[in-house]
Image 1: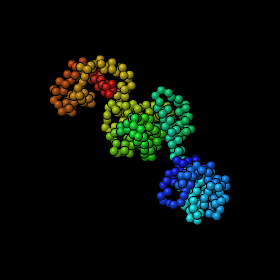
Image 2: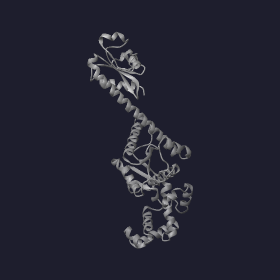
Image 3: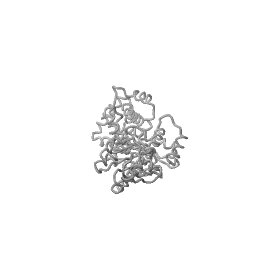
Image 4: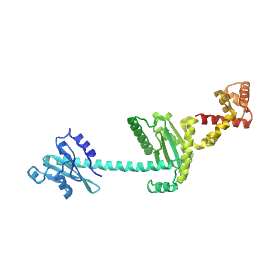
Length: 384
C-alpha cells in the first residue's frame, strides 16, 4: 500500500478550513504528495527522509531547523502499515503546539489506509467471484475441472454441499445506455442490491450479476417448502420494487455440474415467468410441468406443429382459451366448467363446437383437448 496524492489531498482539503497549521503528507520516498502550500508538492522533505531512515519520529524545534534541508519547525511522524513505514505526516508549527494534532492526523491516515486496503481486497475478491460466475454461466465454453479447482482454492466453495440457484431479475435495471452517467448510476444500484442480498440472506455460496438486470444467487440446500420463503425474503429487501422483481429457482444439486444444472433450470424458470406470469412472480422449475418440457422443443418444430392446427385465420380468441383452460382444470366436467365460467351449459356446448369446427379438434375428446392445451402453450412461447 502506498500513499498517493489521490489519497492524501482530500485529507488536506478537509482540514485546511479547520486548522491554521500547514500540513504535509509525504510518501515512502520522502516526496511531498499533498500540502496546504501547493508550492511544496513534489519536493523532497528532508525531515521525512530522516523519519524513514531512522524509523522514528522527528521533532524539529525552531532553533535546529538548519539541520534539516528544506524543512521547517514542526513534527514529522511515520505512517505505518503492517509494520512498514509507507509515508510521513508533517505538521508545521511549534512542536509543543502541534504534536497532539499530528498524532491524531497520523492515526487518521493509518485508519484510512487500512480501510482502503480492505476495500481493495473486497473488490479483488468480488472480481474473482464475478469472473468465475461468468465462466460458470457461459453458454458453450465450459471447463468443469478448472471451475471446480478455482471454486475450491479461490472461492472456498465445497462442491460436495448441495445448493440451488436463484435468478433474480430486476425489471427497473435497464440495458447499457449511451449515457455514461446513467450506466454508472445503474452499476451503483447493482452493487448496492447485491451487497444488501449478501448481508441479509443466509447460506449464500456465491453470487454475482450475470447481466445488467439479472443477479445469480447460489444458496445451500434448503427444504423444498423453504424455496418460497427465501424468494420472499429477497423480494422484501426491495419493498418498493416487489412487482418489478421476478425470481426463477432451480433444483438443489451438489457438484459444479449440479450447480450448473440448477442454473439452467433457474434460467428456464425465469424465461417461463416472462411468458407465463404467475402470482408473486416467483417460480421453481418443478412448478412448470409440461410447459417446461415444451419450452425445450426447438422453435421450428413448435411452429410447424402449431401451424398444422392454428393459422392466422384460425387463432383462438381469449374467450375460447379461457373456456378451454376451465375445461382442463375441471377434467372435462361440463357442468362444473359452465358454473366456473358463469354461463349456461348450452353456451358452453356452442363454444366447444365452434372450436371443433375452427381447428378440427374436439375439446370433449381428452386427446384433442391435450393437443389444444399444447397449442395454447406454444402460442405464448413462439409469439412472446
